[in-house]
Amino acid sequence: MSSSVTRAAGNESSQPADGAPAEAAPPHATACGNAPAEASAPAPRKGAWLVRAVLAVLSGVLLYLSFPPRPLWWLAPFGIALLAGCLHGRRARAGFGLGFLAGLGFLLPLLAWTGEEVGPVPWLALVSLEALLIGLTGLGIALVSRLPAWPLFAAAVWVAGEALRARAPFGGFPWGKLAFGQADGVFTPLAALGGTPLLSFGVALCGFGLYEALRTARRHPGRTTAALAALTIAAPIGAGLAARPLVSDAAEDGTVVAAVIQGNVPRLGLDFNSQRRAVLDNHAKRTVQLAEDVKAGRAPKPDFVVWPENSSDLDPYAEPDARAVIDQAVKAIGVPVAIGAVVSPETGPLRNTMILWDPVAGPTATYDKRKIQPFGERIPMRSFVRLFSSDVDRVRRDFGPGKDPGVFDMAGSGVGMVTCFEAAFDDAVRSTVQDGAQVIAVPSNNATFGRTQMTYQQLAMDRVRAVEHSRTVLVPVTSGVSAVIRPDGRITAETKMFTADALVAEIPLRSTRTPATVVGPLPEYALLLLAAGGFGWILTRRIRARRAV
Image 1 (spheres, rainbow, N blue to C red):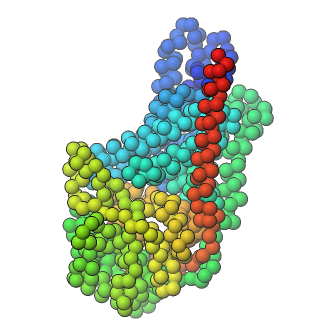
Image 2 (spheres, rainbow, N blue to C red):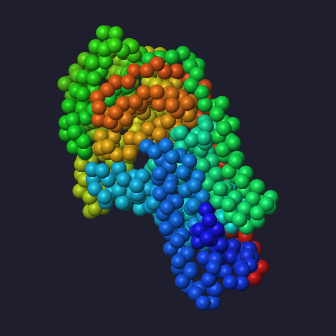
Image 3 (cartoon, one colour):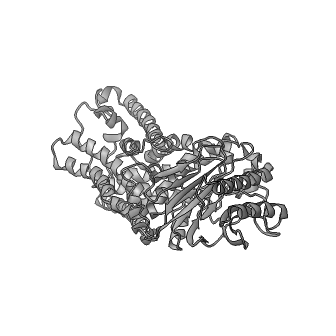
């Protein structure tokens, strides 16, 4: 990053640090660093703001490009470094605006799949809301950038922003965590040490440290401060490398043969549900075909099988015909099968349910999805939202959340159910492993998102979860990319999009808990306290400065 760019991006703040004296400027220096201040002060200030705004958007674009399906995870620290250049030394209001622009540059392309079948209004509304929260993050980063060792505080503030987006509004939307773009990166083992908050913190710290190292090296070449700044780059990379022994796919409890079924859907779009019986038939047919392949010796016999979310949108408890189709397929394969179904109680909300179906006993255990997708499976403020999009009426009856983790005993193996959207939430995955899951299954349905990047973004999420908890992750999807992911995050088998297929693989069973599984949310809480400490320090400095006047 050249000196002129870093100055325009915010390296040479025209505002003094709160509670601290302003640095002396050269006699003829301006915000852009060249023209005499007396002759043209207003123009450079406007020009500098425009440059910072463009660079803020570009920083968000770099973050987007670091996400799958592109293997460019290393762009994330550079995106954060560019954002740091925009925010360093800025006032709170400028930090908010620049953070908002960075959020737009990041999330507009990342979440384009949300408008695939419902048009731009829901997509733009979601992106705007999430970008506002990133704007608040930018505000916080601008404030703590005035502190010594500010990259530490800024990285903690970034994690605090992600924690906020994971919880609010309407239960949160964690999509776009820095951690979820790092499945192939050197930082990934940090997930096994402290979960996705620590992984995001490591990436953010590297980015903020990169900017600070460039800034201090340019201002004070050869000074110890430049070396100390460089440590904020080396520390997270070194920690990631040091945590690699935590990443293992050893078969602690032996191995099993698992199968995931991708039955495909009759057609793309929201109306795929209108052919619910065809979707069910597709998955039953592909399971029967697998049974025939096993009988003919073309495929190994699985110990259990997992179907995707919504593989039966017909309630098998209420629809005898659907029950018969499922039962026939399960009996054909002769092993326990986890079925994704929509259960319709006589009263109350619908249930997005995984049903453990035994070839002899029939349906036994169930798991109700706990994290219900707002504006997808339930419609908050329905009458208000209808003013902007009539598509809300496609969801005629809201889904309700389950309460407890679901771990199925499938042929003696503990298989934890984490349904689709839930994979984005730390607590949903962690509680399943804490409840005894030796394998994680993430049955999903992304037929409504067509051939967009959504399926690859979700697959990367699942890979990070595999490393975080050191578990094999099975990903059966109705029509996207189904996969088998080893506990070290490697994909060993995957399907093509919109292709009926079955993946059969021998997988390790593991029961050891990683540090991330054991400590749970404590690393995130610690980082939130660090961010709060930075804000407290800023407040203390301001109070002292006012008393000194």
